[in-house]
Length: 183
Image 1 (cartoon, one colour):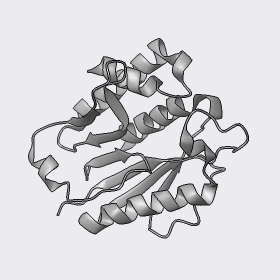
Image 2: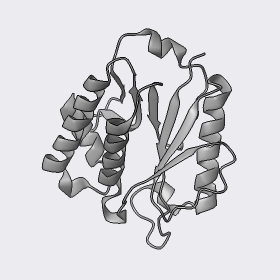
Image 3: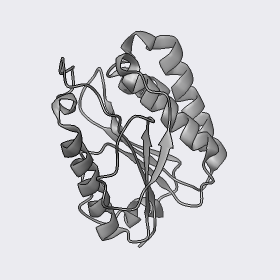
Image 4: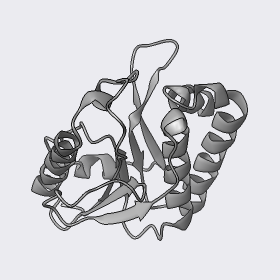
């Protein structure tokens, strides 16, 4: 079984007005429990893998029971998805590519080995769905470690498209429009 680096994004957000995504209504501890379940499911099939949480300084992660790395970024509530993409972009630019990366939402569980995926020659793996406006789901991005320069070019294009075309969608869904346009 290959080791991977599972990378998720989480910041504490106020519960006050809810927001457009159901997870904005979760208590912080419940959200951290979700991250913990995601990490445990990943380690079940990929022991020796790492977990990295892209977050901000204010977010509390002490309740995570698994070992993890934390990287803090500036994250604004009103531009959360854009800031997530920037964190992912900066992470990929600085990454050493010793392991493949799974950029994964915390509400996803791994239910089998992902080894077969990495037997194919690819750089970026994306999740397609039957939706003409947003056919690419930004919640799972598979990053192979074979050609780091290709990965960095893809994320640079992703960043450029999001910044130029979808800055008005920085709160939600702009990442999925930008991914669609990358393809």
